[in-house]
Length: 281
Image (cartoon, rainbow, N blue to C red; front, side):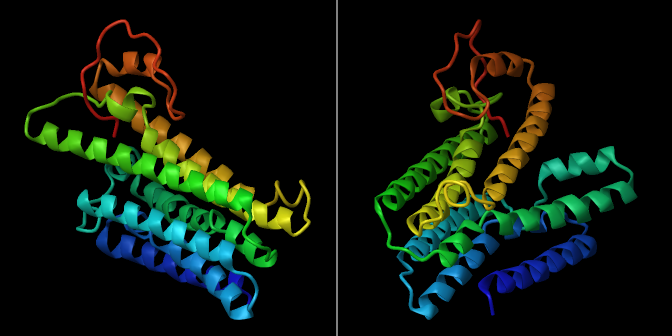
């Protein structure tokens, strides 16, 4: 069986289970719980297919290891926030309150389940490109892999800074929203590094195609770029929605917006007044 066919079958089963579970439990965070798991499985399906065919699978094994590290970090961070203990994402609850029940159920089926589960397949398709174009692991592959590790480290630091602040806030030692550490350079550094990792995965797939002689169009720029693009679009939309909630809770958030980049870490612009320390999520 073509590994892509197997990935599609696994994705369809996962989507069906998430949708049924959301109906039965009235909890729409099942896709969130699968988010850090199914992409790891998809990439390893392609890697194992390459290994079993006897071609040079070094690049795909590296991609599998990198995505596994991504999944482990995300799973740990999600678990310590209570994500696997029945805690629903607060944003879904807010949207549920803004929609009629039938409207939210359509949103649940077509966006939360079908769109996002399809996206989780699309972001892993560079590994399909690598499977289609087996070639030796080269210098550019090493560069893109190193960038992935750098982005993974950045997201780990950002999440830990956010977690530490939340714990201080629970103890009454802090208030407002976080503006220190990496959050002094980006309002959502964890979001930026999350997207950047998948752009690095895209680059690894494109590197395989180029090394196999695919050229610029069809190689460096190939159809699997749609996954990284749609992930970025999703994160931008999620960021705008999240910030609308933060702005309604914290009057000083408007000043933070003016002084700090939304996603890409950049030197902060001058602030008119010190903002209260806090978190943006």
